[in-house]
Amino acid sequence: MSQAPVIFWFRQDLRLADNPGLCAAIDAGQVIPVYILDDVNSKPAMGSASRWWLHHSLSSLNASLSNKLNFYKGDAHHILLKLVQQNNVKGVYWNRCYEPWRMQRDTQIKEALKKELSVEAHSFNGSLLWEPWQIAKKDETPYKVFTPYYRKGCLNAVPPREPLAKPPLDEASLHCLLSSSETLNSLALEPKIKWDDMLAPHWEIGEAGANNRLHAFLNQSLQHYKSGRDQPALLDTSRLSAPLHFGEVSPNTVWYSALQTGAAIGDEKNLDTFLSEIGWREFSYYLLYHNPEITWKNLQSKFDAFPWKKESTSPELKAWQQGRTGYPIVDAGMRELWQTGYMHNRVRMIVGSFLVKNLLHHWHLGEAWFWDTLVDADLASNSASWQWIAGCGADAAPYFRIFNPVLQGEKFDAQGEYIRTYIPELSALPNKYIHKPWEAPVDVLNSANIELGQHYPEPIVELKASRQRALDALASTKEP
DNA sequence: TTTTGAGTTGTTCGA
DNA sequence: GTCGAACAACTCAAA
Image 1 (cartoon, rainbow, N blue to C red):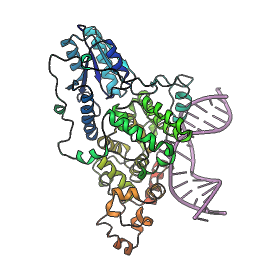
Image 2 (cartoon, rainbow, N blue to C red; image 1 turned 180 degrees about the horizontal axis):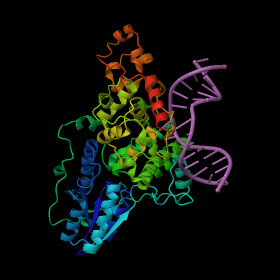
Image 3 (spheres, rainbow, N blue to C red; image 1 turned 60 degrees about the vertical axis):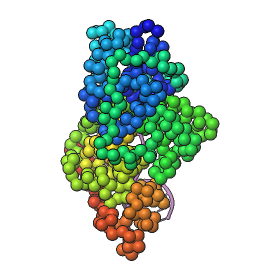
């Protein structure tokens, strides 16, 4: 093959199967596979847990490309143009991303390739079921509420593209560069302090792992997803958030695999609940695309006057981050996050409500902590979800929805299994007090070897008073 | 244009 | 212990 090669630029699509951009690149000629760690343009900079996941995902991808993946670090614009020039590249292929900084950068790259080098960039949809510009109300403006967006907008639109097969990718279809690239290790994605040893046992990173996770979920949990997903001790959520974020599996593959399993078990209710969660992911991207300011600005501007605390040095924030609030379900969640890089969905809502309402801290502070510590940290989902729990999102939670961590614990972790997993110092406490150790009589605490304030903290805030404070704060932001 | 029904995930209080 | 109502007012979506 003497023809000029093409570049396939891997981004949030670290897989071979159902990769439309990669398939198109292979059809066009010999492929130079490229990954660029663009820490020049990224806003915000990638979090630590994400960087760790990315390292292993790239390592896995590189192995499935016969170690022919070319790594670069720096300004993607500069690097790509140089690569195209030096290697006589005739086309550049990628799958679209939707973060504002990425869209801006990619548009500029596309224009520069065309204008300066007369090379065409070809972009594809590899990470959403429906493009954000494809779904609109009858008056052609974007939806602001999930249910009509999903039911009327998405489900009545053209069905999602069916997954593409893994392309035939032998060594002959991959083009070797004349100049050498960097190595994966030189990207320095792994942490300097070995905290990642703690996370590693919980995950199987890469395309094969993502598919194993998908099928384990479909086989074991889909049939009781509707109720199972709410109980953090059960591990019945899909835990596909990180694989989807990095594109180790496509939402299309998840969607159609779930439909298939759902049909086989003949259960619409659980299937629909799961599919609507995929719909929520779509909705977050949709909101971000049409409202790029949601990453930093309250969608409902009346919340700009809400008296949230904004100090990132507050001792209460520190206690929340470290899982020392004195409320077991909150602390268990924050420790799960720290130890595994993940937190169960139900518990994310509880800890979010606690920070924003009971502790009256700004959602930015929670968002920033999640951004750094979650392996599935995703700009669209993280922003939209924090705004949702804070009540300032487009699709706002009602003002009175303030989670009570004791009731939530008793309802969704009745046996305290989740608490005992992440707060071993409470493990000998009977179920009756596992969600409210401060109410336990002294002899019960003694026989469980717990001294409150010593082994486990006293509550840092009183529930009833802090709930009322949040309601009052909301009332105070209203127009007179 | 106006009207109407609805809005992911809850808690508390009083009967 | 259980159950239903109340909890602001507003915006959105569609008829």
